[in-house]
Image (cartoon, rainbow, N blue to C red):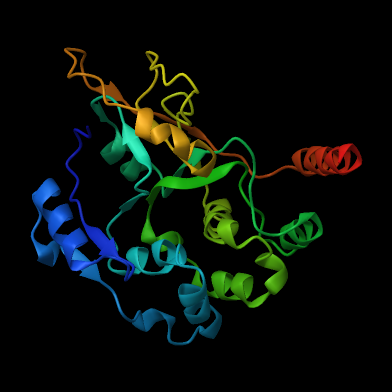
Amino acid sequence: MCDDDIQLQLFDDGSLTEKDTHLLCDQLSLSTSDIHHIQDIPQLTPYPYLQKARTRFVMCRKLLDIPLIDDAPKLLLDTDMLFLRAFHGITDAAEKYSFVCMRDQQSAYSPKLITRLKLRTQGSPLISHANAGFLLIDPKIIDLERLEYFFSNDNHLVFPALVEQTAWALMAAQTSTPQYWEPRAIAFPPSDLQVDASTIGWHFASDYRGLLSKASVPAPSTQPSALLKTTPAPHMSLVEEFQRACRRVQSIFKA
């Protein structure tokens, strides 16, 4: 569906079988040499906590392997994304911004409130509502020293499924103009799976995974390729932190 000139590469985290590999290559017209099997990352040698994180959190392969291969911009795509119409805009975004992510429905991060506030006071804020399912990044944003500190503290890693996403939010906040993909264009699927004029792609994240088997790509359209735009991604504000804390207290009392 993407009309931009991009080079597709696949990275195996160690879970692909030989059958998987041949199936992927057949369906995507790739050779087996196009699937990368990364063993060691020399840049991580001085960083013991990052080496540990790479093994402990499988999603950190996205964070620590792919961006460090070379200096070219990287479009990191989870396999639970489904694109529904032809689009362009990736190349333009890569020329303007060093970080673009999907906007989540909430700021779902691995540290609890007090720890997030400590990170903020230490000069390591998080952007708001980051979702790592569809990422465009400039590898220059990867700050290994800051990430080593982040992964050295278990209080930053309370919710393991959200660790990689939180690390991206941390890196994004250090850039001058972090962005979201236009939220109406790259969205979570509605329960009725109805496509509207703004829709380019859906992210079938865990809460929506059950809808994926019911989804289908519309027949080819005569509509022109849609421009995928971006919109600024702000830092998490103290107001948002307070609102999240209030909702948390309310949920406890309701329970």
